[in-house]
Image 1 (cartoon, helix red, strand yellow):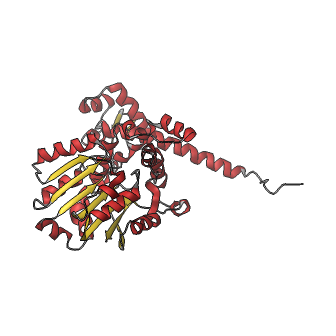
Image 2 (tube, rainbow, N blue to C red):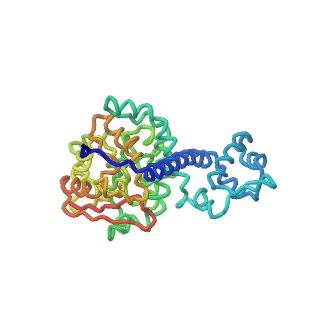
Image 3 (cartoon, rainbow, N blue to C red):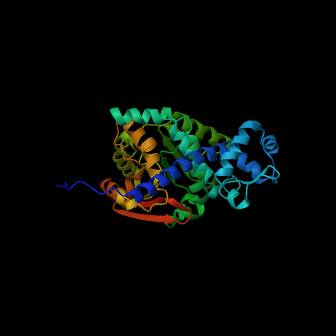
Length: 362
């Protein structure tokens, strides 16, 4: 007598899955090598060279030839560089360079490849959390603010003036005239310092949990002569109580809400800090709040991995909610409205398939 839970083993499906899994393993390994190619400048070097051998490429890049030669092996079998075995030379095709070099920063996919080794560095910590609960603190992520600044440099900064700020009609004119602006979870303050230079009549404040990040932002503000920008290290977990009431005309968060210890308290604080005619502009990860709703998301596996191994866990490390990067549009609307925003719009931008842009008003 057969049991209902018994199923026929589909050998073809098993074989197909094994082949797909091998592809995932190869892709993960290739991503690590792409990250190395970005960080060492090898892609930028090769883009400017004619077909060259490993000695010539290493010399031009100022790197050790033996390591470059092995890296070129990975790039060859990964079909990222072209190799001519007759001449022993390697070439980065311009069509590939368009997605791998700093000369095309809005399309440099090598920046995102850095997430794989960066997150892999805390794998032991994450496995411990799977067994015991808790989280991994910010202090364990040694390059994350640097990486997020590069990420933001591709998605936010190039589009900020011409595409993101115009999502709020009349906002650019108000910034030119002079308003008070807060960026909560500012990281290294790249967006704030950019806006401070564009709009000298406005005053900008950046707050972030990381002292390292805000120190970097203050140093950059001084170097740029942005006397209208200041940054402070601050835990925003109690922002609903500590926010200065009706102090700001504009509050922004760029990829910052979902990894807060207390995201709802942050949002309530933002609502409290806004003037009656103020506006809150939030960039956050685009997607559904439901797993099945993200089956066709072009970056779904990457974003869930980043969430599990950074965004969610750093929140849990603070005893927080652990909302995670893939909290999704449905939950975002729920949170914004619960925080007191009566008018919430969501926008997408053609250059940025990774994020939604929310415009929230009291």
